[in-house]
Length: 288
View 1 (tube, rainbow, N blue to C red):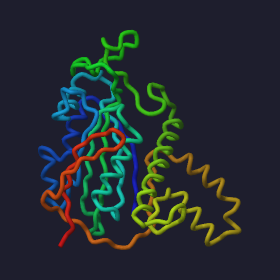
View 2: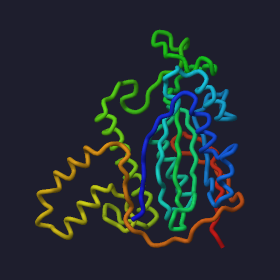
View 3: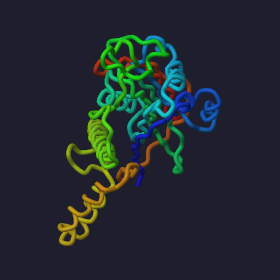
View 4: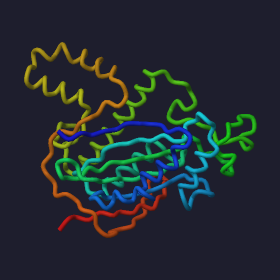
């Protein structure tokens, strides 16, 4: 079984600029590209004018000006289907960004593609975003990360908060529920792409469909022990809902695919989705 993974993490003051360099494979992290790993694609969006030329300017300002115990970034890390070609994976990432971030938050992303233990591709996404929310006011770096002023928004920093319950203090079970909802949305999105590529049957249990681990357990048990399974499904689902954040997901078995190898720059394309404009650079080619 190949593991599919989605998790959300946050970074504190002083951590964001080094992490941005890590996902962009800049500085000392560039050495990773000499050991078989590919930087398959990169992109940014929604940056203020003073950081549009270099996202590191934005993250460095966040490290400098956010409050001492404040969150400087939120990151969504997710495994991408290796059976989809690189350009389709980029489109998949673009739709994820459109759905979950839109025009609200400044963000930076990168697709890394090292070799897995089986010698095949292991593409995965790092999507960093600022919890500061964009509005109609332009702010200098030393103002952007100040406390928001609800009475005079132009005098304070950008409002902070992410998701449908932005700004609310959530309990642990509420955060877990939001994570599970994000995973469900991702599962649906990936399955639509697999269906379009002819790798899964619409609404069915095709060979490549992305499914949560609990669903796979239920389906396997139902096939092998139908009479014993009927009364256990509800209990299994309750237990799954109680799992803490970070529990992985799985892809069902899939046939081998010729691995990709790092190669020269193949394409530079403009991705436009729902008003999002990003320069996307692909660095992958099929091995000969």
